Length: 355
Image (cartoon, rainbow, N blue to C red; front, top):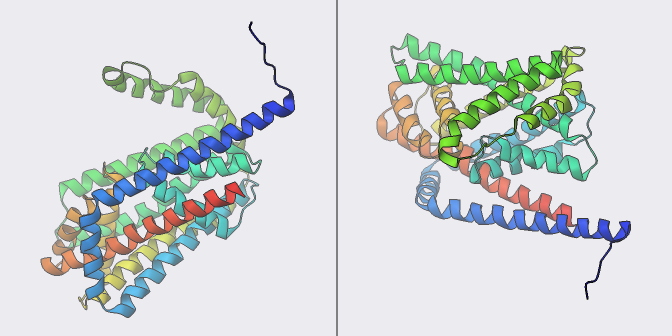
């Protein structure tokens, strides 16, 4: 005998909630597993970083840590400013936690930055906020971050040019950053003008990605129809931005402040080991290290920045041995510390979801 089982709306909703909780637990376990695997594979580098920081002057190492912790707060404030522009609710504390968790997820599960955006979208779904607006805020954050860095990069390239140390690889990497930032800005502009225009642009990009990936995965990776749906979802939120362009001043200034804090961490790394430096050394060294962090194929530039940054510092007349030590100290504070804080933030957000 066959039994036909039907669910009432109440029981169906309970099943949905149970499934959602199960998926969150599964995702949480998966992320923690990937984090543990990442830590295991990078343990030797982490050990070298810890040994290096132990040899530095304690007060300046702590000063660098303080600058890095301030960076979390400034990043949270940047998101808060963008949230307010788009009419979303949030607090600096919550958004600082979310940005730290997003950084952690993007590092241990790299997906062209989209892994971190999922943290914000998931929070929006839980709190009844618009996922489209949260997506716009995340894209705007990325664009403003690129704008602030391009300004610092320009200063860094001027420093290298004046010292006759500008290499073709640095020019090419800078051009890549400029193209990425210009593309994001152009897509934001299209979305503010027309949902159809943005949808056509995203569909064209989807076709290009599918054409490149099809020989390897033998199927379409992205759906063109979804590109048009996505464009219409966020276009209405983007159209409100030209009416209030001055409202982007605060998040832009915060983006500049975040880059200034990272340069302060580099300065603290020099002071920790009593290595002489100039303003040009700090700007040029940071610009090149962050440049290759962004264009690196590895998550957060691991393995790439550690090789490029000593070369950049030595070209700025820092002795090689000291350049290596400063690189390890700087990466310990700007990469490994945020990774640990991000793991804690991710766990805290998960605990809040369960309560």
